[in-house]
Image (tube, rainbow, N blue to C red; front, side, top):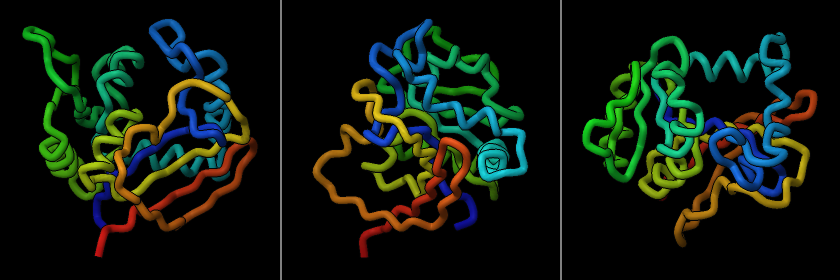
Length: 191
């Protein structure tokens, strides 16, 4: 697969990507920052450094609207000026996203635009809502889950609203590092 659409997400062992009460000023929820301690090793030559460099080598970003807003709209530049496609239910008149970001209301169109913009590079996906919508529509090819050995107990789950369809995954890579296991799964397509 030349340019997979790949979810990148830190997640607690009990399935949370943010602690409870995630909101502006507390973007990761209570205790949610714990999920990102592995980024302390992002400049290393170890597995976390490798995964981080791969994430920054992506050619486009698809984000959910909530993630985009909580991240301060990334001031219009997630990394290296790549296009940011913000999957949203609707756009208010006059709401123009900054920099390299644009709003898209159709999941199929969003996936198509992001793949085209990324060229031969992977597309990075951020946010539970976008991930769920893309999975339901059959557009997530791979998932890079940064599994953190903690039970948050509450917060925002990654896979809460997938519907009734069964989705099979194949583990294609496992990298262990300090305080994280990076797991890459390929999404199996129905025969």
